[in-house]
Length: 483
Image (tube, rainbow, N blue to C red; front, side, top):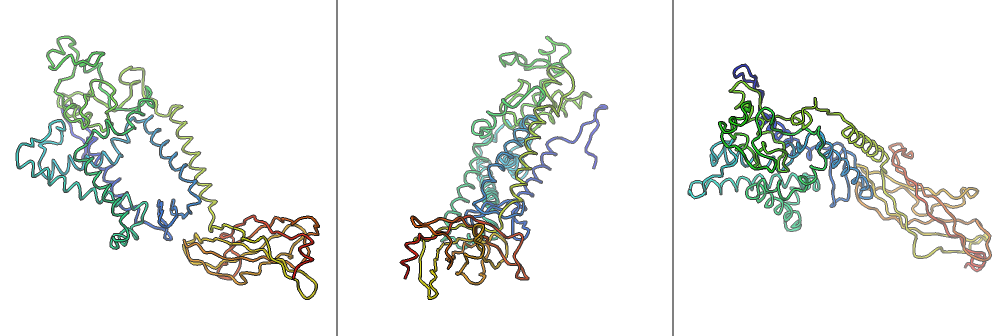
């Protein structure tokens, strides 16, 4: 398909608007499909408070490994900030869900489907709501938006409640009012946002517009009006000097701006790009498309381009994309990715918490004049693998006491299903005199090795963890008085 048109020798490229539509379509389809994709039962991203687990890059982690989340958030924010340093509010215009929802509602539902708006290129003129026909269309538009909002709300919740559980929970609505309430609340907010709040969300609510100005520099790429070619429409106080081309050219004969204001009427945030940098600009580049079309008919390049102050305003030379600030963000993103990869690669394939029993120990005198000393523990174990496995323990005593402390209970390996915490009472026993202390009980440091068994009944090299705990051996007087 030929995406370029010729007008008086000037090639008019494919409008940025179409490229944004392709990006919106890809982002929407990708976001809707991603929660359904699983590998070995794990999702690409799932933060489940119901099952107390985190799936990341198709690897399952437990809630005890939520220390990964700050690194994910840092990666996300640094990525957006780095994107802003390089391309301005390109995230807002090309990726932000708010922008996608607004484009779908305004350009597709109101303009293309219901014909409530006359033209996509005129975003300033609101429909005449005094007409009954338009009132009916507005109600229909809101209802369609509400339907899409419920789909979007469901899609958002799928990253916290997986689809395989989500619809089952909806069917059992009497026991899952929190989920239904969250979905309804999100859907109603989205509907209010896209149908009534509109771009005011970008201008007044979203904090990102207040942060962006700190991140900009002279090489940041954004939609800019070339005053050197078009002429100065506004003065330094942003007061409009000219509304007609003849008045502009009376002052500056070289000025090329036709004062058609196509770049103004097409702007979704209702700004005039000729006024200069403004926080409301979301880099959607609709103004670039509008000016490209108008100036292309005159055989001239667009007066509004996606470039930098360094190149367009100051005219110092070409924009420098890979400058120290951008390289610093790229370096930080690489470092965080390495940290995430390392920490994710060292995940434990089972969880184990060891708590001592209420009594330090118990003693019993044996027939061969030996004394049995038992220590009891409560082990909380969770199998984080996607399949049912058998587990067992072994005790590693201090050096010189090998084989003198043994596990009496449990005696055989036991099974643990994935994601379910299993409570086991564990008893360690010795019949040897480990310490001969007349004054006090002795606390001996020991190590517990918990492991899974593979198909051959051997100790798994992957599902294996070690935990430190203690074994309390009584003082001599207690041993002598044992019954």
